[in-house]
Image (cartoon, rainbow, N blue to C red; front, side, top):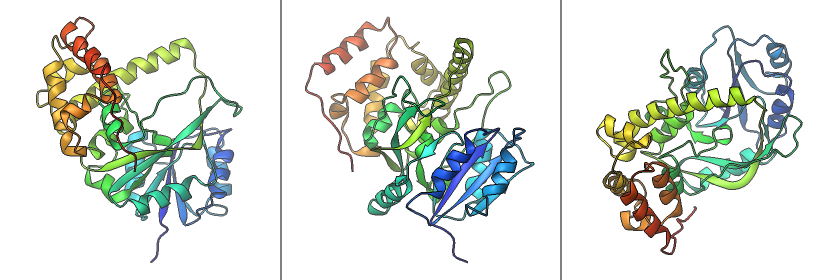
Length: 322
């Protein structure tokens, strides 16, 4: 049998009222050799009824229902079920601009050394009006590595990846714990994937990312869960991703509790050379590494902060973007 080149992966839980617009944005893509997999995780708001109107009648694909999972495990299951060599992420409240898939597929075809690409996006509110605030995303592979030292600086809702590369590094995971169930499955996967493969983020804004408002209490609770989850991710992947073999050192560094971080940061700078070929001396001249190093340094660590300040005064080096 022949399979489409791309499979859209859409995990969902109560996607109304935004779901129809998201599906329409996939239907109107200029690249059409694609199907969609949707994994419903227990919707009760009419989502399944809408999906039945669209799939497979207006969009080729399949809907998985009555098997609710966490976000990470539903993504894992869809990657396993997909038959296409490429998988594209999509969320039910976002909108992909018409040329998104065409441009991402063309980039991966032109760069076989890349395992993934993502795109920049327009941040909008519930009514698709421009939303305040705009996150900084790195675009080059080197800057992405630096960004991932501290946060998930890779746009998960806009990613296109090679399915086999993701399977080779263990696929999406969900390793939450009862006292802190939030698990940033994207941060975890990107640290593992980019420890062995290359990827970039295209500067083109090819997605409308819908930012939904939250109360201050909701936002603070989410940020706290996010911090706890990212700490666990960093500790789990520190040896392979950052070259830190001692979990306690990784934890202290990530939580800005290491009394003297400079030695460990030098170690990371040298370890990343295996990924991108950039020397430690060059890396310290890059703003993205300086920024992450600063975020990993305790306020009381004056020696490391003085070193970072000295590096910032030197002419900056910018990595190439293929």
